[in-house]
Length: 494
Image (cartoon, one colour):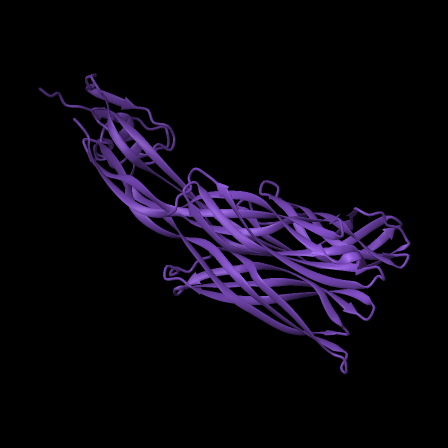
C-alpha cells in the first residue's frame, strides 16, 4: 500500500551563523618636537551599523583614541583623535533578508614613532551574530503507515535592540583635571514580561586624574537600568543581552575655593539580544509500515536559550609580567586602562587569562610607562552549561614585591549565562520502502528487552500499538521489565 503523507510547514527565525572578523584602524598624533613619549592610549570603539547582503556582512564603527603624553619637561598632557572605519566579512550562507548584530572591541593597541608624529594602530575585533528566516516541514499523519504523533517543543528566535542614556554626577576631592577616561558596560540582568524588556547593569569607569603634581586613578561603578518595548516579550523569562557604549562624555568642573572637582558623566548605550518563543506542535516523531519498510528522514533542531544570569565578583592577585625593566629606582604612580582577556572552560569550570593595564612610573625625574599583565585563574560554580559573557576590571593596585618584581591586585566582575539546550526531533519526510514478501507466522513470540515501550514493541512486530496492547492484555504494563514474553496469535485467513 502506497503511503499518502500529510505535512505541515511553518516559518520561524533561527540563528544562522556567528562570524568573527578583525580590522586594523590607525590614528596619527602630531605633537611637534615638544613631546618625548606617549605614555598611554585609551581606545574607545563604538558601532555604527551592520548590514547583510548576499554572501557578505558589512559593518562599521568609530574609533576614538585618547593619548596621554609627557613633554620634555615631564609635564603630562592629553590629545584625542577619531577615525571612522568600515569592514566586511564573507560567508556563503548570508542573505539580505537576515538581521545581524555586531559587537566591537579593541583587541590590542600599539604606538610607534613615525618621524615627528606618533602612529597608533588598533586591532578591532568584531563578533557578528546573524539571524534569519527559515522553514520547517514536519509529518503530521500518513495513510498506509503507523505514526507516533506527540507534542514537540519548537523554538523561534526573537531579536531586539534599543538604546538608552546614562548620567552620573560625583565629586572628586582635590582633583585639578581629568586626563583620560576608560569605560566598560556589562549587563547583569535582562528580564521579559508585559511587552517590555527590562535591562540592568553596571558601567565600570576608570579615570586618570591630576591632583597637584601627582597622577591618580579614580574608579567608579555606575549602575544603570533601561527598558525596551517589545510586543513579543509576553512570557516572563530571561534573555541574552549585550551592551555597547556608543558615545561617552566626561566633563570636569574644578572649584578652586572648595578644593573639589565635580565630574559629570554621560553615556549612550546600545543594546541587542535574543530570546526564544516556544510552542508545542503535534508532529510525527517516528513511523513504520506494517507491510514493508518505510524510508524516513528525520530533522533534529538544537537550540540553546538563556535560562539564568549569574554575576560573580572575584579578587585576583599575584606576580605580574612587566615589559620594561623596573627596579627600586622606579616610583610607581598610577595604573590605568585595565582590561581582561580570558577564556572559560565548561569542562573544568575554570576562567583563565590575564588582566593587562598601563603602569605610569617615574625614574630619575622622567615619566615613563609600561604594559603589565596579571595572570589569573578563577573557579566558577555554575555547571557545564555556563558560558561567560563579559568580564570587567575594577580597582587595580600595584607595588614592587622585590626589586625587579611586580605584583598587583584587581577585582573582576564576571557575568555568565546559564544556557538551556532544547532539542526537538521529528519526521520531516516519509516514503515507501521495500514491500515485505514474507508470510506472517501463525504465532509470533517477542522476547523484549528491559525498558521496551509499547511503540518499540509494535514497530518490531509490524503491528499497531493498539493491536499489541490488545494482544498483551491488561496484565502486561509498559515499559516492560525484560522478563515478559509477548505472544501474538494470528487467525488463518483465506
